[in-house]
Image (cartoon, rainbow, N blue to C red; front, side):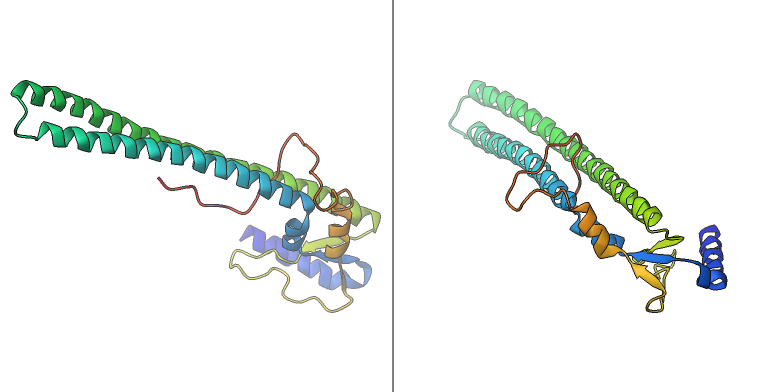
Length: 211
Protein backbone atom coordinates (compact mmCIF):
# COMPACT_ATOMS: atom_id res chain seq x y z
CA UNK A 1 0.00 0.00 0.00
CA UNK A 2 2.76 2.45 0.93
CA UNK A 3 4.66 1.66 -2.26
CA UNK A 4 1.52 2.10 -4.37
CA UNK A 5 0.74 5.43 -2.73
CA UNK A 6 4.32 6.59 -3.29
CA UNK A 7 4.17 5.66 -6.97
CA UNK A 8 0.80 7.39 -7.32
CA UNK A 9 2.26 10.52 -5.74
CA UNK A 10 5.19 10.53 -8.17
CA UNK A 11 2.94 10.01 -11.17
CA UNK A 12 0.62 12.77 -9.98
CA UNK A 13 3.59 15.09 -9.66
CA UNK A 14 4.74 14.14 -13.14
CA UNK A 15 1.27 14.86 -14.52
CA UNK A 16 1.06 18.27 -12.86
CA UNK A 17 4.56 19.38 -13.70
CA UNK A 18 5.23 17.50 -16.95
CA UNK A 19 6.06 20.66 -18.81
CA UNK A 20 8.90 21.42 -16.38
CA UNK A 21 10.26 17.90 -15.90
CA UNK A 22 12.85 16.05 -17.92
CA UNK A 23 11.97 12.35 -17.74
CA UNK A 24 13.98 9.32 -18.81
CA UNK A 25 13.23 5.60 -18.92
CA UNK A 26 15.58 2.63 -18.84
CA UNK A 27 15.10 -1.06 -19.58
CA UNK A 28 17.18 -2.30 -16.66
CA UNK A 29 16.64 -5.94 -17.61
CA UNK A 30 18.18 -5.34 -21.04
CA UNK A 31 21.01 -3.27 -19.55
CA UNK A 32 21.84 -6.04 -17.07
CA UNK A 33 21.80 -8.77 -19.72
CA UNK A 34 23.99 -6.83 -22.15
CA UNK A 35 26.51 -5.58 -19.56
CA UNK A 36 29.76 -7.35 -20.44
CA UNK A 37 30.49 -8.16 -16.79
CA UNK A 38 27.27 -10.14 -16.60
CA UNK A 39 28.65 -12.61 -19.16
CA UNK A 40 31.94 -12.84 -17.26
CA UNK A 41 30.00 -13.48 -14.06
CA UNK A 42 27.88 -16.13 -15.74
CA UNK A 43 31.00 -17.96 -16.91
CA UNK A 44 32.50 -17.96 -13.42
CA UNK A 45 29.24 -19.08 -11.85
CA UNK A 46 29.00 -21.92 -14.38
CA UNK A 47 32.56 -23.00 -13.55
CA UNK A 48 31.74 -23.07 -9.82
CA UNK A 49 28.57 -25.04 -10.50
CA UNK A 50 30.44 -27.57 -12.65
CA UNK A 51 33.06 -27.96 -9.92
CA UNK A 52 30.32 -28.72 -7.39
CA UNK A 53 28.74 -31.16 -9.84
CA UNK A 54 32.09 -32.95 -10.29
CA UNK A 55 32.56 -33.21 -6.53
CA UNK A 56 29.09 -34.71 -6.24
CA UNK A 57 29.82 -37.16 -9.07
CA UNK A 58 32.93 -38.36 -7.23
CA UNK A 59 30.83 -39.04 -4.14
CA UNK A 60 28.22 -40.84 -6.21
CA UNK A 61 30.91 -43.08 -7.72
CA UNK A 62 32.23 -43.91 -4.25
CA UNK A 63 28.68 -44.68 -3.16
CA UNK A 64 28.17 -47.05 -6.10
CA UNK A 65 31.42 -48.86 -5.31
CA UNK A 66 30.46 -49.28 -1.65
CA UNK A 67 27.02 -50.56 -2.64
CA UNK A 68 28.61 -53.10 -5.01
CA UNK A 69 30.97 -54.28 -2.25
CA UNK A 70 28.05 -54.58 0.18
CA UNK A 71 26.09 -56.71 -2.31
CA UNK A 72 29.10 -58.96 -2.80
CA UNK A 73 29.54 -59.42 0.96
CA UNK A 74 25.84 -60.12 1.39
CA UNK A 75 25.96 -62.77 -1.30
CA UNK A 76 28.99 -64.45 0.29
CA UNK A 77 27.48 -64.29 3.79
CA UNK A 78 24.31 -65.94 2.47
CA UNK A 79 26.14 -68.79 0.77
CA UNK A 80 25.07 -72.05 2.51
CA UNK A 81 28.39 -73.78 1.90
CA UNK A 82 30.48 -71.49 4.12
CA UNK A 83 31.12 -72.24 7.79
CA UNK A 84 29.33 -70.40 10.62
CA UNK A 85 32.60 -68.69 11.47
CA UNK A 86 32.99 -67.44 7.91
CA UNK A 87 29.36 -66.34 7.84
CA UNK A 88 29.88 -64.35 11.04
CA UNK A 89 33.06 -62.82 9.61
CA UNK A 90 31.45 -61.73 6.36
CA UNK A 91 28.34 -60.60 8.20
CA UNK A 92 30.46 -58.30 10.39
CA UNK A 93 32.21 -56.90 7.32
CA UNK A 94 28.82 -56.31 5.70
CA UNK A 95 27.65 -54.43 8.79
CA UNK A 96 30.66 -52.11 8.64
CA UNK A 97 30.15 -51.56 4.92
CA UNK A 98 26.51 -50.62 5.52
CA UNK A 99 27.63 -48.09 8.14
CA UNK A 100 30.00 -46.55 5.57
CA UNK A 101 27.17 -46.32 3.07
CA UNK A 102 24.81 -44.64 5.56
CA UNK A 103 27.50 -42.16 6.60
CA UNK A 104 28.24 -41.32 2.96
CA UNK A 105 24.54 -40.82 2.25
CA UNK A 106 24.36 -38.23 5.04
CA UNK A 107 27.56 -36.55 3.87
CA UNK A 108 26.27 -36.35 0.30
CA UNK A 109 23.01 -34.72 1.42
CA UNK A 110 24.86 -32.23 3.63
CA UNK A 111 27.26 -31.44 0.80
CA UNK A 112 24.43 -30.86 -1.70
CA UNK A 113 22.58 -28.57 0.73
CA UNK A 114 25.73 -26.63 1.61
CA UNK A 115 26.88 -26.12 -1.97
CA UNK A 116 23.38 -25.16 -3.08
CA UNK A 117 23.27 -22.46 -0.39
CA UNK A 118 26.76 -21.26 -1.28
CA UNK A 119 25.91 -20.95 -4.96
CA UNK A 120 22.65 -19.16 -4.15
CA UNK A 121 24.43 -16.63 -1.93
CA UNK A 122 27.14 -16.12 -4.53
CA UNK A 123 24.51 -15.49 -7.17
CA UNK A 124 22.70 -12.93 -5.01
CA UNK A 125 25.87 -11.10 -3.95
CA UNK A 126 27.27 -10.81 -7.46
CA UNK A 127 23.96 -9.68 -8.95
CA UNK A 128 23.72 -7.06 -6.22
CA UNK A 129 27.23 -5.86 -7.05
CA UNK A 130 26.43 -5.62 -10.76
CA UNK A 131 23.23 -3.68 -10.19
CA UNK A 132 25.03 -1.28 -7.86
CA UNK A 133 27.67 -0.70 -10.53
CA UNK A 134 24.97 -0.08 -13.13
CA UNK A 135 23.12 2.33 -10.81
CA UNK A 136 26.26 4.44 -10.42
CA UNK A 137 26.34 4.94 -14.18
CA UNK A 138 22.57 5.59 -14.26
CA UNK A 139 22.84 8.30 -11.61
CA UNK A 140 25.90 9.90 -13.18
CA UNK A 141 24.22 9.96 -16.60
CA UNK A 142 20.99 11.34 -15.11
CA UNK A 143 22.83 14.14 -13.31
CA UNK A 144 25.05 14.96 -16.28
CA UNK A 145 22.04 15.24 -18.61
CA UNK A 146 19.87 17.00 -16.00
CA UNK A 147 17.07 14.44 -15.83
CA UNK A 148 14.54 15.11 -13.08
CA UNK A 149 13.14 11.56 -12.97
CA UNK A 150 14.37 8.29 -14.46
CA UNK A 151 12.15 5.20 -14.36
CA UNK A 152 12.99 1.53 -14.85
CA UNK A 153 10.40 0.62 -17.46
CA UNK A 154 10.78 -3.10 -16.66
CA UNK A 155 9.77 -2.55 -13.04
CA UNK A 156 6.47 -4.07 -11.88
CA UNK A 157 4.00 -3.28 -9.11
CA UNK A 158 2.89 -5.66 -6.37
CA UNK A 159 0.23 -6.93 -8.79
CA UNK A 160 3.04 -7.75 -11.29
CA UNK A 161 1.64 -5.13 -13.67
CA UNK A 162 4.30 -2.78 -15.13
CA UNK A 163 4.54 0.47 -13.16
CA UNK A 164 4.83 2.51 -16.36
CA UNK A 165 1.80 1.57 -18.45
CA UNK A 166 2.23 4.22 -21.13
CA UNK A 167 4.71 6.91 -22.08
CA UNK A 168 3.80 9.32 -24.84
CA UNK A 169 6.42 9.30 -27.56
CA UNK A 170 8.80 12.15 -26.96
CA UNK A 171 7.63 12.68 -23.37
CA UNK A 172 10.53 10.66 -21.98
CA UNK A 173 13.96 9.76 -23.33
CA UNK A 174 14.94 6.08 -23.41
CA UNK A 175 18.49 5.89 -22.04
CA UNK A 176 18.86 2.10 -22.33
CA UNK A 177 21.13 1.89 -25.38
CA UNK A 178 23.28 4.82 -24.22
CA UNK A 179 23.85 3.10 -20.87
CA UNK A 180 24.76 -0.21 -22.51
CA UNK A 181 27.37 1.56 -24.65
CA UNK A 182 28.78 3.40 -21.63
CA UNK A 183 28.91 0.28 -19.43
CA UNK A 184 30.63 -1.74 -22.15
CA UNK A 185 33.18 0.87 -23.19
CA UNK A 186 35.89 -0.96 -21.21
CA UNK A 187 34.82 -4.45 -22.29
CA UNK A 188 37.68 -6.70 -23.44
CA UNK A 189 37.82 -7.51 -27.17
CA UNK A 190 35.99 -10.68 -28.25
CA UNK A 191 38.03 -13.73 -27.33
CA UNK A 192 40.24 -11.82 -24.87
CA UNK A 193 40.58 -12.90 -21.27
CA UNK A 194 38.44 -10.75 -18.92
CA UNK A 195 40.23 -8.60 -16.37
CA UNK A 196 40.76 -10.25 -13.01
CA UNK A 197 38.66 -8.61 -10.33
CA UNK A 198 38.23 -9.10 -6.63
CA UNK A 199 34.66 -10.28 -6.97
CA UNK A 200 33.08 -11.96 -9.88
CA UNK A 201 29.59 -11.45 -11.10
CA UNK A 202 26.59 -13.85 -11.40
CA UNK A 203 24.60 -15.66 -13.79
CA UNK A 204 21.27 -17.17 -14.45
CA UNK A 205 20.24 -19.53 -11.75
CA UNK A 206 21.17 -23.15 -12.32
CA UNK A 207 19.72 -26.13 -10.54
CA UNK A 208 22.00 -27.84 -8.02
CA UNK A 209 23.24 -31.25 -9.21
CA UNK A 210 21.11 -34.06 -7.84
CA UNK A 211 22.69 -36.96 -6.07
